[in-house]
Amino acid sequence: MKGEVEKIWKNETEDGRKYEVLQINGERYSLWDENYLEQFQEGQTFEFDFRESGDFKNITKVYNPGDDGSKENAYGDQRTRRIVKMSSLRSASRVLVGSKIPTQDRADKTIEIAKKFEKYINEEDFDGHGD
Image 1 (cartoon, rainbow, N blue to C red):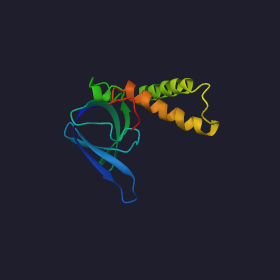
Image 2 (image 1 turned 135 degrees about the vertical axis):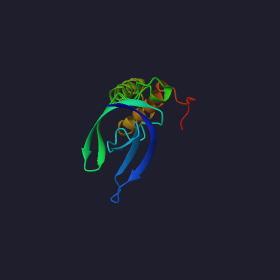
Image 3 (image 1 turned 45 degrees about the vertical axis):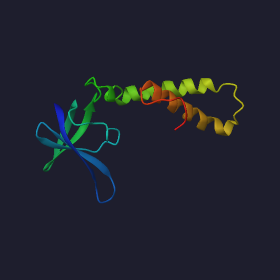
Image 4 (image 1 turned 90 degrees about the vertical axis):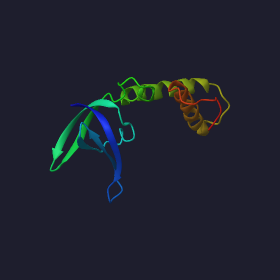
């Protein structure tokens, strides 16, 4: 099914599990997949599968939520996001080859640098300095 997000509600169960309710084409759908929570915006169009459970419609699969062409969602699908992260991590590890940073601290520094690369790739506000 394909539809446009008309409204979003953030919810939490009594035991603390977070989920969202998306109103799409006048119908309400529950979204439980943590990989997609807070990924959608009102007005965004995407394709999905759902399953009815009693009175509820639960989204079971999401197809390319970032394909609406907006800048905010340019890296919306999980596969692309993982590729960007892996590329950033690989580049960061190359930057640290031969560094004098102690081995036990090198992983943390690599991740810190990778996050800066990822931020730059995603065109987020980037000033080149730490947060």
